[in-house]
Image 1 (cartoon, one colour):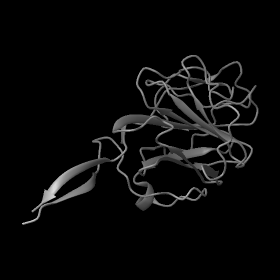
Image 2: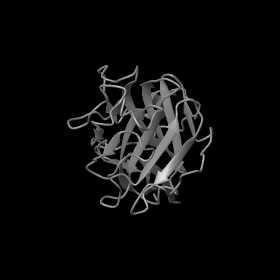
Image 3: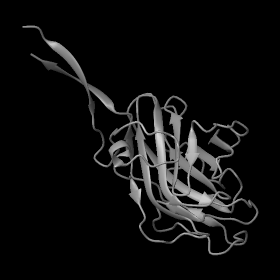
Length: 229
């Protein structure tokens, strides 16, 4: 009898993320049937300046990592996804766009995707060992990120993130404003102990701190082989 080798996508991670589908990057939430369950939630209305981040989503396909956040927001604000892909090699510093926000994550991020909520500029900053300058001045464009008043989403090539096999990553999300000299973190997710949220328009004398990330998420989906007799 002929034996056939078949591949299937193993749904990884006890605390991780399983591939659900391929989101359309248009600023519209495609539902949990595509995104899967959120990797972090924050049901309380605890944001500043009308911002309320309530759910963080992460999924992927064979090419891209997809990041999404259910978040009430305004067009004059801006967003960030912090991504840690390699434990112990990232940068815990001031956030790359100079807002009144300091990173103090348990796993320092290697990448930060920053973008404007009016669907203007968006760029991927990479920690180069000393600062966040790598990636400055390279607009990713509308096909890679899109924002509506209720959902913020983006995709990044797995190859750009250095993900070529199964590995754990951690992700966090935050929103700030358009004044680098004054604005802090209007809301963030996860929002655990130690995170601080803006309490005024000018946080220059009391900078906000972000120190909570998602549980480890295993990406990409691992292909396992099995035989059918």
